[in-house]
Amino acid sequence: MGKIIKIFEEFQNVTLDTVLSECKPYIDILKDCKKGKLFVRGINEKNIDIQKFEMLDSRQPKDTFIDSHNMFNTFFYDNFGWNVRDGVFCYMTKTYITGYGAENYFIFPIGNFEYCWSPDVTDLFTRFEEEINGNYEDPGWEDEEEWIDFVRDIVIPKEYKIDNVCKSYDSNEISLNCRNGYYVVNIDYEDDIINKIWK
Image (cartoon, rainbow, N blue to C red; front, side, top):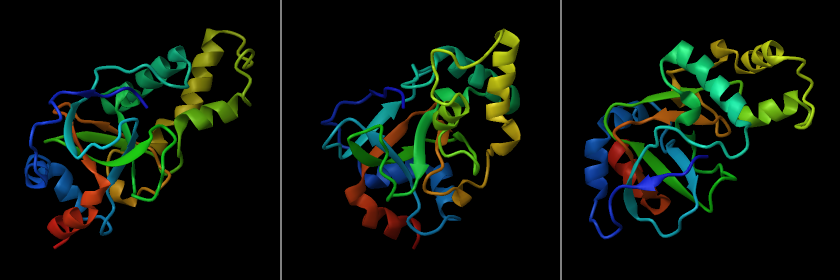
């Protein structure tokens, strides 16, 4: 998962009520989800209470080849109008512990946002790695056209959805396009969040 940047200092006092007010489109989605099902992201920062972050315009992938990452984005942009692989990645669960961060936090996109996920893909990089059998030095592409076809076949855009995120499983990665930024909220607020959203 890509690096995230804080846009407000830690001492700024942001309440849970402020988060819920500024994230109404997300809250409206949650009301149709199973009680307690929330966006969760692993972050390499501890002791965050409630903090506002901005979304990067692009990100350096942690594992995927940059050329393949960019090609994935081309296919996603052609189908959905945004670079899905540059989004803010999360899962919709509390129990799934990600391998990309020291701590799990709830993610609340601010204002209108988009998302993309696939019920058939838990992690696109894992799928990519499986397809090349872990052979990074010689993945078997004869030329650029073969590589493009290979990447396209992995993505298979029809598997991806931009709705019905409530139906995602714990292990389905979800990419968020939240240009207004997003709040990171400590999971200790879980009971308060549930009581305020699912009244």
